[in-house]
Image: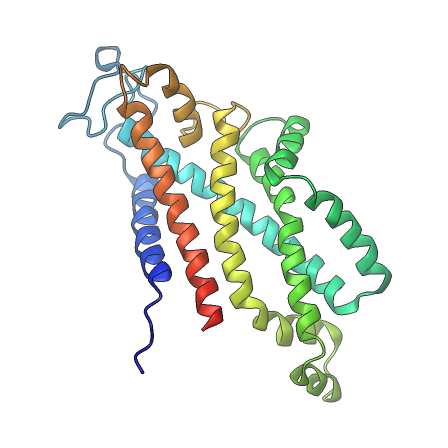
Amino acid sequence: MKKKMNKNLTVGLWLTGIMLTLILVGFFWTPYNPETMDNAAKLSGVSFSHLMGCDNFGRDIFSRVLKGGGTTFCVALGTVAIGTVFGVIIGAFTGYFGGILDEVLMRINDVLFAFPSILLALVFVTLLGGGTWNVIIALGIAFIPSFARIVRGEFIRCKNMDYVRSAKLAGAGNLRIMFVHILPNTVPVLLSAIMIGFNNAVLAEAGMSYLGIGVQPPQSSLGRMLSEAQTYLFSAPGFALFPGIFLIMLVLGFSLLGEGLKDREKE
């Protein structure tokens, strides 16, 4: 019997691959300096010299979209890295050992989980101040509870399985059992969670930058570009259209990847 094609995973891989290629290109090359202003080109439309037109300061939109996409990706990467590392550690210890450690840490986790991640991040950024690194730290802390909950559930499911009992009989220590035997078996679920986390982190960074408390000028940001463009929706529609499309495609790619990995687990 022919295996059914995982359309979500296939489309997600292609779309994410294309977007990451554009982001990678933006790290090393852009047609213009994203911060260079040209008064003569203010709000100019699409042309051969400016593929996506120029913004209200005469800056090349294509160059700023490439740089802004890279900024958004780096923030999402840092956010997911912090959330995953600390979430895995907390989830592993609480799920494997249980007891008072589990009760204390998971009650704290439940309190944090009760608030939307973006709201927690807004609180942390307000305390820490704006800037790329503070946004990464704030979002990373806000994402820890969701990863901890997922990993804890997988450790509870796996800790009484036969291969874990065999490892205990062979004399393996708790840390070895946790991170050598159990953790690799949580990877399929964790990968799906990471893709969804990327999706949420991209949206969170864009939302915070749109509100003016995320990535700060002169650094390019898709969310800030959308904020600046709202005044010129009719006079220069491309100003908002192209950053918006880039953001949608990036989010859609990660979202489809997450759904595709979930579908793969069920097969």
